[in-house]
Length: 176
Image (cartoon, rainbow, N blue to C red; front, side, top):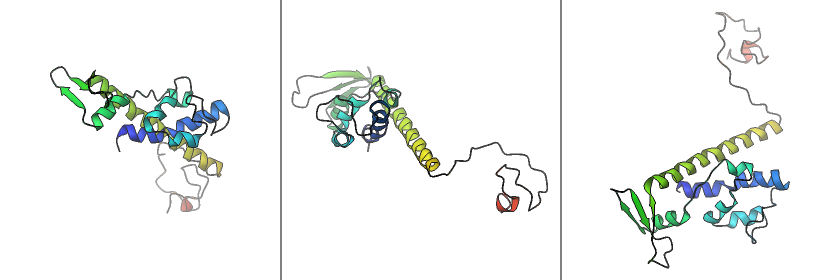
């Protein structure tokens, strides 16, 4: 699975979060495409069509800044590309049905798109982490904040409170 495909699958999360924030319902889709009325319809879309829902006007998709040249990606997948290493130009056929028309793009532009996709994957993975954290908090499990290690005295009694601040006796916390 390439980054394009992975991100296309992961976009369900920020789109669903936008639905909740802007439309107060996880299934209420932004009316961008007439045949997409629910999140289930969105999931059935091709990965290329999913990118249409990454709007700069909605917070959970705006920061992803997805730049996707689906035509170039498909041309690479079908080996319809030529690369000029001197000029660093990629020449590709955007429509396999009309092989007479060709487009060009600099390798640096393509690398920029790939970097944005990678950063978007990291952003969506942060959403996943935060959603799991919220689920744990909803279940009453408060995540422990990471702190700097405290300089403990040389000898701590087994029945004294643990110096980490947990409120437990040392023997039940860090004394194991």
